[in-house]
Image (cartoon, rainbow, N blue to C red; front, side, top):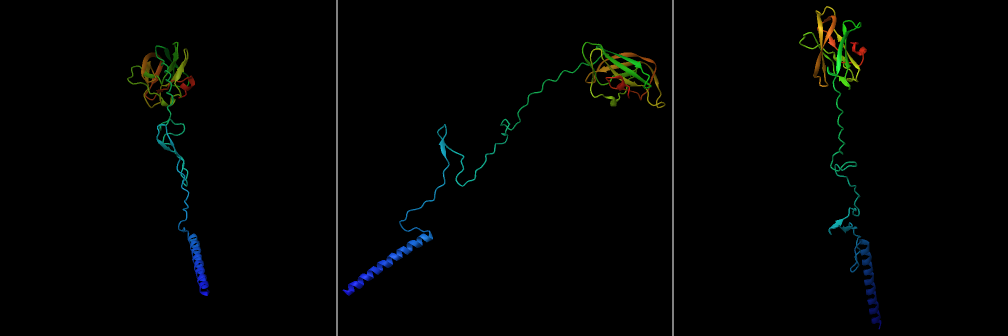
Length: 240
């Protein structure tokens, strides 16, 4: 009977040792991150898939929503499709310019008259006057081209006398040009002249006709003289 008791105690001890061994293994597996045999899997949550849908043709579409963990991006407009543009990379067309106003007809021997006269100051000068005798405006373009008697070349024009704008004459109005007859005394031999040819020009500086005038008595010229551009007043015409 004593022998059976000892055998029973031995079996119980063996069972206790086995139970302690299994408990220790389970704790070790948990501490090391391993799973015991037969344990259920613990799945890591999957990334949320992009939302999908169906377009009007029945095809599958995918939204532009960013995937989990990805940074959001900003869409950059295509070149040329900027705000205020027309989408083709070109600036919007502007309205065509209106037609330029027609130029004013030139003062010519047909719509104006020209005269030459002596002046007391400055000395050795003459004054040329053109008057609009027509019924509409005319323009005294550039300077008059002058020829004394039968000279083959026209008289020099003083560039420094060019006005800021072309002189426009209403019917009855006048424009003026100064004529310097001589240079410094003793530099050139003066030549006596009796007649003066006055050539009017248009906006292209082309001749529109010539008027022949009788010069004041004892008019002498030399190669150093000049004529001014047409001016709107006498003072400007004779200031050179």
